[in-house]
Image 1 (tube, helix red, strand yellow):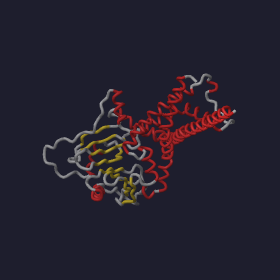
Image 2 (cartoon, rainbow, N blue to C red):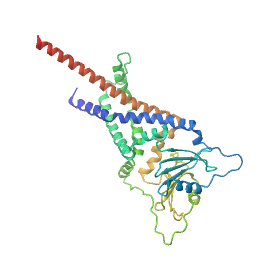
Image 3 (cartoon, rainbow, N blue to C red):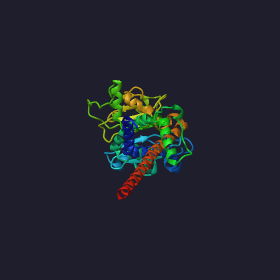
Image 4 (cartoon, rainbow, N blue to C red):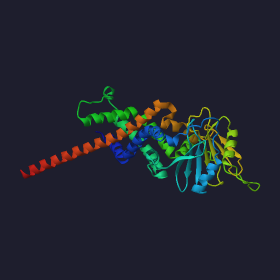
Length: 377
């Protein structure tokens, strides 16, 4: 083995040993989420579904629900309403403050159907583990750096795999000992699927750690588009507009959009963001936004998903690409299998390293015993 190849092998091995467990965890949790989220909706239909009552009915007003939430959780809590995405869906109210979690409400009556903390329940905990390692912003930064390390692993793995004779490049020997079979699967699987896995790892890191959007903007020579700031009031502020008035004004500003979410700040010192899904937008939840002054109800800005800076616009494609929603059930299945392959590469690499370590130790013991015998003879 040449010195350069030995260097590549050491770099590949020690990066994998140091960070491989994070990749294994990300792969397994990502694959499980593809199955766990729809299963969770089926098993807990009392939270996620709210069929419309018979006869003519109109959705309940949001203002009394918002007042109720502020009374329970205090004036320092931020509230986001996620409107029903499909007929029969419940209304979600996500709270961030002294308590973090989501309340599931009947959109017709306003009655609470149940609530969950941010890490309550298997699926919520699984999502937090996958997206932040349960460490919030610190975990997101770790995932971003591990994604960069994976790219190094991919390059070093391809260098080590690169064959002299292509006829043998894709051969997997399954009839010999398990270690050899696993080594071939690890080598060929990493070479065949490494680039596809890199897309999944990189898109996950991009969503987890938003500063990466600034890197995209820097390469594109674009400046980051910040949320609009509240203008200085020329006259004394009157009564604050209701949530329903803000909702109606936002819909008039973007009549062709399907209203998805209202994000309400804790105090009227930051703008309200109303998110829409517009025709042709790839993000299933919509990131096209109407920004409004919570003090007056004035529209401050209307920003479509493809009219913002490149770093922010990329999220509209990266999110459904990472989750698989961009390609329907076929891509979702591929995402789940990719997560399992990523975990398999990590586990198989660790196992192969352990087996080689044991073999070296046995060889060293044998040589030491032989040396003692020679010295005694």
